[in-house]
Image 1: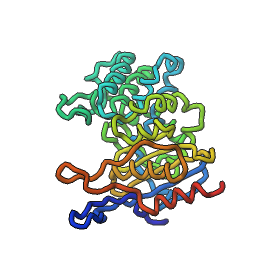
Image 2: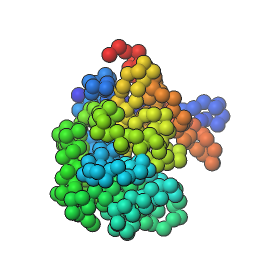
Image 3: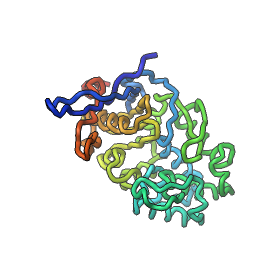
Image 4: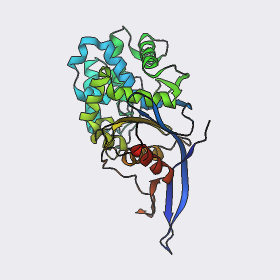
Length: 325
């Protein structure tokens, strides 16, 4: 087992000299695999058991689509994209959730996620539809009807719906090490980080996931929202999804035409570090051009430093890009 290493650094500027000093750093683990799921590079412990959180939303959405069968053809790409979103509760997000709820004949107050104001408008009333996972829960409501379930049972790991979703994820990701409760109330699984990377390699290549991936690439702003790294990555053609506590999954093709996938875990759970690491890895490996930058640390309402990938992470990406495999 190897230890996590510093992946992201945060600096703050000395007002007298202009020099930027290291203020904090974020250590983490990265596993990169090729299109066949073979490990190309690992920083830290590739077998680290990790709660994947929202990184598995594309797999949860795919399982629900399988349950829906012929009904899948009636869904719009917007409805599928919002089903694997961790959204900001922007108007476009709420519209897509509403469309799924109408299809599921489910009132917004019957969603199985908690109420929230959402990130877009903190002064908005707390409502279940504004919770960042409401699209997933709207899809649960729709898929649950196909197995005769409605209401709170939809997030019970012993329900017919969740047994199917969990068994599907185990088929795609391998053995599940633990099942806990996510922030939204749905089951949260833990798998080795390398299994998550391999899952993303499969996500990008297996036709079974084509409706999910197509929807996200067509509507990157629905999967995340304004300013989000995952939306910028999706807009560049990268299959990307972050999760709470500093987890990130990626799949992309490098400038040599080779498929790569990666899973990232930031040890202290910082989402800002996971986003910076994900974008930096894609860039340094020779992946697509991504139009995104980490928000700068501020002071007095003005930028006062930077959030940047560590030399170790950038050098790793360059080594992967130069390597033959």
